[in-house]
Length: 153
Image 1: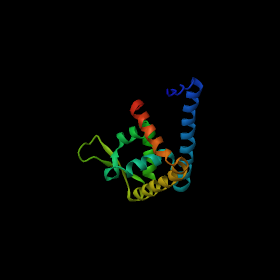
Image 2: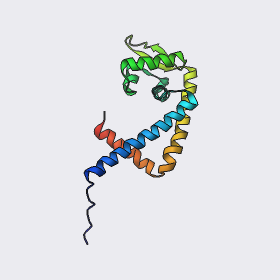
Image 3: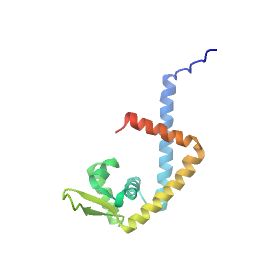
Image 4: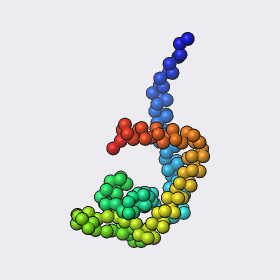
């Protein structure tokens, strides 16, 4: 008995599938960021920076590295950092080892907000991603990891 080989998707199907990935991501990200903004008053870039810092050793990171990881230009990152400093969420700390390096570090208030926002993010993602996808959530994460590895930085 011969097993039929699955038919290759046509061009329209491939383009449609990719469109669904993008649309699903955007709808989910917009919902997540909307709830984070509503609960914490954080814009997406500010939330991303706080999340990166709360997950970093000593809750700090060199500002240039943080800007790159957050995919922000130098000027864009400076504006976000200035807003976070003004809100007493982060402070700038000169490196004791290299005067060219300045760290962004969470303040005590920033640590409190970042931890609560991270917890809320996980709760929201459980509700809007894990529950609808069930066991498929793990497969989706692995598929995205593969695409990042094959195509990414």
